[in-house]
Image (cartoon, rainbow, N blue to C red; front, side, top):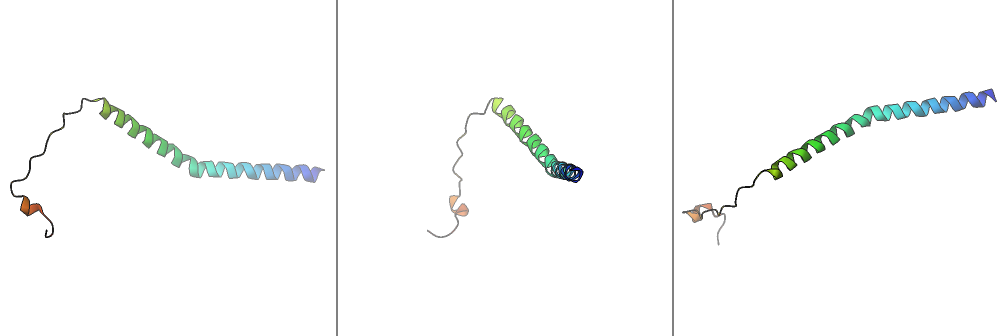
Length: 72
């Protein structure tokens, strides 16, 4: 009986140590990732809250042949 109780406590302690190890290894990565995602989200909200400039039309280049690639 006492051997069974001892083994139960050993197994529970080992499981707890594995849990702590995995939290230590993978917990920080998740927290840093979540912090970066929140920062990006706030930056995106701040940019979308600003007044956007009206779209402009680009002028056609004067020497368009210079910008062509390949033969037609």
